[in-house]
Image (cartoon, rainbow, N blue to C red; front, side, top):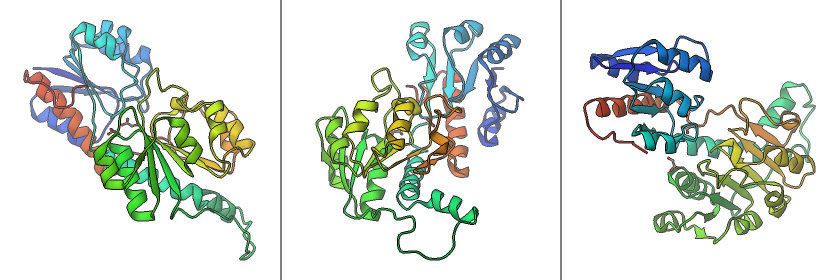
Length: 321
Ligand code: GLV
Ligand code: GLV
């Protein structure tokens, strides 16, 4: 009977699917993410065949060494920058992710972040709760209209595509995008215009939204220099991975009002925030919850389980990366 370790409590549906197949499933009982040492210790306990891991687990050579019997790590996330895939490949270890199910959810959250920051929802909420509201005023917390404004999408993958679609169909925004290659389908559906380089996006867009994976080539893609290119009235939105932005440079740009504001769901050193970020009024901050709906987290659990089941049956898992 195959043995599976799940590194943290996830929605029951996937766990049940694995148990229903007769597999022995252990779920970490710690209330929180395992440290690497704790993970390695847990893996020493039994000869596991498969691991269902989370984006908070660093999966690298040390972990592979600790569990030589494990030939699949099913990541409960679409992003897999927490996993050393090169090393996995060398060792013939299969890595899977959970794409697609969370696309709409992350795009909806991104739209919510855009609305929250331009309409100053979070700021207005803090203001009102603090008892500062003393009557309607013509100049109170002025925001920005979206209709006719330009949304610059960096990364025209599934999430970028759906976000662009929501913002163009729902709010009448014009879309420009940058990606390593042109995407005809994206252009057709959203009337998006391609830009050859990210600088053009930063120069033209009223809102820049990032939908790229974290790679060596995308780390600090948005840095001090790039922030300088943005309009002083522009907003930066990030629901991808924190480290694609130099977060300290962003704090400096926001302080200087070099850009109008930002909305972030992910952080360079999460759960830590860059110094000064939390004190800024012109940012909306959410705690990496862009895919966190009941429906989607349940489906992610199912998909991670399906990948493990396929692998243990000797099939190619549907979401091998
Ligand atoms: C969440 O951030 C994911 O990559 O699924
Ligand atoms: C993820 O699903 C993406 O391609 O953006």
